[in-house]
Length: 291
Length: 260
Image (cartoon, rainbow over the protein chains, first blue to last red):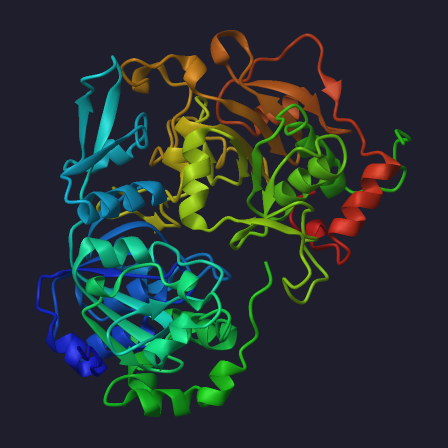
């Protein structure tokens, strides 16, 4: 089986109104090239599930989003995502604001074909007051009440990984796979952009297979896009692009997202995008963050 | 060892006071979010509670905390196990953790908010981070707060605009729960240390930083504080603690993290 495709093929499989999970965490290992391909498309009314960063901000700013399911949206070194803020403060998007761990539980429930996961999380807080869809239930085993975190079923998951073979064996070599595994398992279809496509035998070397966190049956398509996480990081290959992210953030104050998109995304291929941000070699030279 | 330091800043005093919050925690994950809470946890681990666990703020648990400044990479750090975000939740839900975070709002029940200010849930006036991990943290393990600028905008006279974390609010106590299921330890500020050990879990002043008065704290707090008979002066860091603080923050990034 050969699951390789292009970013345009991936977006061709997405439809208006879909619920889409986006892997990564804040400014870390986001499938930004796939996000940019969505920005170039006519897709709309998406529900986005993410540990959000610029991916969520850009999609909101471009009017692609109906609803965001989130615990945070942050650029980390710039704490607040400027375009997500605008969208929220203008009341432009619906939201399901939940705890980071609740999102994990919702994804697990979907992955395991369960309607919900019981948890304490959210009790006593406004999370259960503002989210009318999240029910609080009695337990058959004790006298406490429990939050029934509903399954977060994804129509599609978009993930960026380090490498894959053509059959969809995907490797994440960075220090954390975040909740990408759960996203892949919760999704009907999972599309993974990767830094490189490798031979299947690659994974037989040393302990390379230890860095593969889901089976290939969970992978629908793989797209080779080196540098495809830019401006987010893809540790250990490259860090996040702080100057570019600052420029992006500045567009929120002056020019707006449309001006950013005109400069970097609209009518431009991913190769042209990379040239505009300094080229692939420059991306690969971005220093890793130190916390 | 216990010689009080002569040369220290407010940041150092607050770090030393914050470290005390972790003194009797035993073997738990100490998570200090932000420069001063992280240095407080580091100081506790490197002095009186070596059993504490800390992460590298990325994906590994460390046997020795990383300095917060003056490093150019994660190479050579003392990793002892993988601790990615999914495993952090395993730890959180086990209860073996004490987090110290910096909320934007705290109310008289110890409920906190980092999500949004004003307006409505559908359209907040000011969108901030989102609730992040506060709901889960607050009902799972011990929590403390650090507030670098003690004022009535943080310590508000009403409930938080969006209640992110459970506190000692009888109206919101879930079925089957008691107040003992909630564990808010200290609130550390640029003026004082407070806790919720007043009558009926009323917030109270525990210690005042040198030169700060009870009146000053109450004036800058939007809710009524319990004023115990004996209020200590916040203890100065020792010379040995100052050596650790300087080793953990050679560049002095802590100095800009607190209002004087």
